[in-house]
Image 1 (cartoon, rainbow, N blue to C red):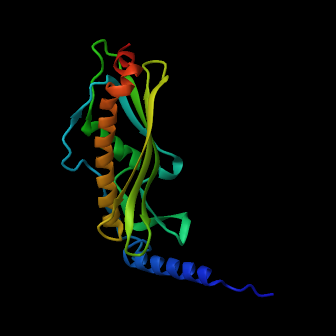
Image 2 (image 1 turned 180 degrees about the vertical axis):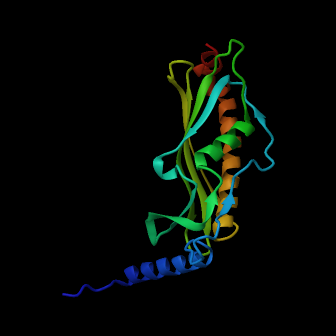
Image 3 (image 1 turned 120 degrees about the vertical axis):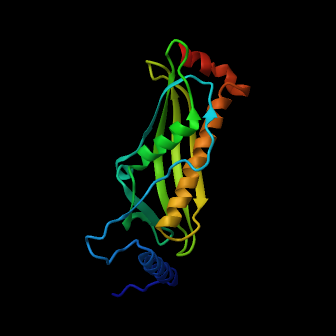
Amino acid sequence: MRRRTTGMGARMRCMGGALAMALSLGGCTSFSRPDTPPTIFDIAPQGVSPIAVRVPMADLEVAAPSWLSSSAMQYRLEPASALERRVYATSRWAGMPAEMIEVVFSRVIQTQPADNGSGCRLRIDLDEFIQRFATAEDSAGLIELRASVLAPRTDVLIAYKTFLVETPAPSPDAPGGVLALRSGVNQLAVTLAQWLTSLERGDTARLNVGERCSS
């Protein structure tokens, strides 16, 4: 017995095909010679002034899961292929996303250890770093991460917060995704610095973060 294709299913497949074709023209699928070198991109700080944070910090590290631990530039087609991660064939990051983010955060978030050399550890867990397409012409850079302030020596959790930023891409291709993700990383660096500064103010002052990071 033949299965009938619903109108919705047909439309979804058509949308997926249109997106795939458009992205192919933009370099997601490459028919070029194998020896064509890929274009390399990075996410260096973009005009963001360093922000001084008073909470004593001895270390800042960014960790990522295995699927984000390569230089592949990833994208997703939604809603046609929402469960599928794809990579640009002729575009690469200069390093792994976690490495590049750590460099930006370290330059923007200016911290110092306590007078006794002690300080908390700021751990960033990167959960998502991808260009997400809603249509063939509409995409955005999506970044999701978790920030944990860990006590000196014991790594006891002192403060925790999740962050998400989605920045529209100026063009539906790899360079557009780079600009969107670069903007998102710099925005998150500022937001993260502001959060760390807020830990010694208002209701969070009762956590005694500064004192606990100095012990």
